[in-house]
Amino acid sequence: MGRSTILLLLSLLSLLVLLSLPSQISASSSSHNTLIHCLVNHSEPSHPITSAIFTPSNASFSSTLQAYIRNLRFNNSYTRKPYLILTALHVSHVQAAVICAQNHNLLMKIRSGGHDYEGVSYRAQLPFFILDMFNLRSIQVDIDTETASVHTGAILGEFYYSIARKSKTHGFPAGACPTVGAGGHISGGGYGNMMRKYGLSVDHVIDAQIVDVHGRLLDRKSMGEDLFWAIRGGGGASFGVVVSYKLKLVRVPEVVTVFQVARTLEQNATDILHKWEHVAPSIDNDLFIRVIIDVVNGTKNGTKTVRVIFISMFLGDSKRLLSIMNDRFPELSLKQSDCIETSWIKSVLFWKNIDITEPVEILLDRTPQSLCYMKWKSDYVEQPISREGLEGIWKKMIELKDTILYFNPYGGRMDEIPSTATPFPHRAGNLWKVQYQANWNEAGKEVADHYIEQTRKLHQYMTPFVSKNPRGAFFNYKDLDLGINHNGKNSYREGSVYGVEYFKGNFDRLVRIKTHVDPSNFFRNEQSIPTLPPSGEGYRPPNY
Image 1 (cartoon, rainbow, N blue to C red):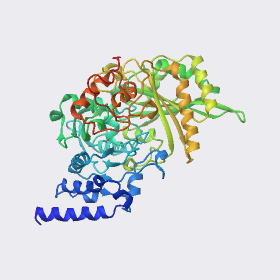
Image 2 (cartoon, one colour):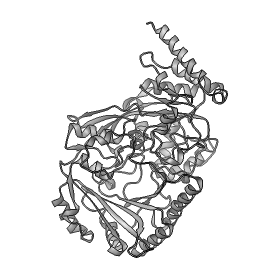
Image 3 (spheres, helix red, strand yellow):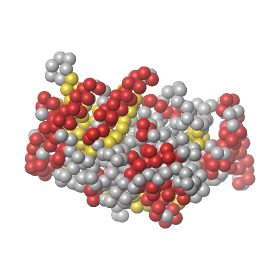
Image 4 (cartoon, rainbow, N blue to C red):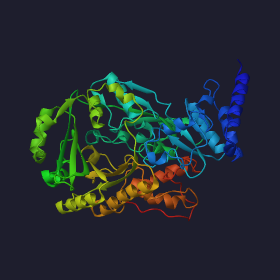
C-alpha cells in the first residue's frame, strides 16, 4: 500500500471521527473541528494516530478520562471536560499534538499519572484537550551502567519493579506512592524516603528527551543546559512535553529495615516529637523518620486526642538501626519487635500500607487502592517548634478534627546540594517539610467547602512556625490557593505570586528560560512559569 493511499485512508478515518463529534462541540469552533484532521496529517503512516484519539462520542471517552483522575473533587458532572483526549502511542503523536494545537490556537493539557493535587493536568476553565502520556511507559534498566531510561507515562511502581527484577542492590530515590506518574513527579522535583541519603529524583537525572514548542525532539545536548536545568524541578509542562528521563540508579543494601510506631498525647507524644525535631534532620543519613499526626478517639468516652505516628525507612539491618535509635532517639523506645527487615522493593509495599507478603507484581497495578476527595497544602519549617507551640497545634487540630499533618525530615544530602543546582530551592536551612491533608469520601460542594476550609485554617494557624519572606511551598504539591495565572497581560505578575513561593530565587531564571524557549507561552496552565513582560511592564520579584 502506497503512502498516498495510507494518507487518504487516515484522512477518511479522521473525517468519520469528526462526524461523530456531538453537535454542540463540533459547532463550537471551526478550529476544533480541524484538530483531528491536523493530527492525522501530521502523524507518521507507520504509527497511525486515529486509535489514540478519543472524543466524547467514543464509548471509552469517560473511562479514559476518569482512569487518571486521582482527586474525586474533579471527577464530577460539572467539571469541564476536554473535547478530545489524545493518548499518545508514539513520540510522533506528541509532536503532532504540539504542532496542531498551536496551528489552531488550542489549549493543551499534559497528563502523566494524574496525581496533580489540583487536577490542572486534566481540567481547565477554557476549552481544551488532553495529551495523555500513559501509553508512553517503556522502562529500560541497565545495571552495568547503573542507569535507567523511563518514559514519563510510566508509574513509579513499574519503575521500581523493573529495577528489582535486575538487581537486589539498586534502587531510586523517588516517591512512596507507586501509582504516581514518573513525568510530573520527576519534573517537579521528586522526593521520597531516601532523600536524606541521596537527595531528590532530579538530582539523579543525567539526560532527557523533550518535544519543544517547535515540535522538535531534543535531548540534553540539543536542548542546552538551561532547559535541561529547568525541567529538573521547574515542571516540564511549562517548557515542553518531556517524553523520557535517563536516570542514575543508587545503591541500596540487600536488607533494609522499616518500622511504624504510634504514640498518643497520653503516651508522651509531645515530648517524643519535640526530641524528633532536633534529631530527625541530623541523625544518620541512612535513616528517614516521617511523622504523621492525626486526631483519634481518646481513652475516655467522647474525648479526642492527638496521635503521632513515626514511620521509618533505614538503609541497613535492625541491629544497626536499634544502636542508632538507642543512642540518638531513645525517647521513642523502639524495640526489636517493632522492626521489620526486608528488601528495598518490599519496603515500597510497606510504605504504601500493603502487606509485604504480597507479590511485588502488585506494583504494576496502575489503579490506586482507593480514591477520595482531598485538599492538600505544604510548608517548610526552619526552626524547631517549642513544646508550647506543639501543644497549641494539638489544640487547633482537635478543634478542627478533620486535618492530618505529615512532617518529612530534611538534612543529610539535602543540606549538601546547593539550592541553585536545580529549580527546587528548598535545601539547606529546612528542618522538615509539612504536608497538610484533608481527605473525605462524601460528594457535594458543602462537604468539600468544609474540608477545604479546615485545611486552610490549619495552614493559617501554622504561619508563625514556618518559613517566611517568602513562605515556601512544594511545587509538586500543587496548591491553587497560592495564586492562579490567567495567562493574560498580567501573566508575569500573577505567576510571580506563586512562583516565588515554589522556587524562591530560582524563579527569575526559570522565567528567563521560559521566555527564550516558549516566548508565545504556548505551554501554560494555572500555575505555569510565565514569560517576561514587555519592557517596562510588570515587576521583577526580589532576589532571596
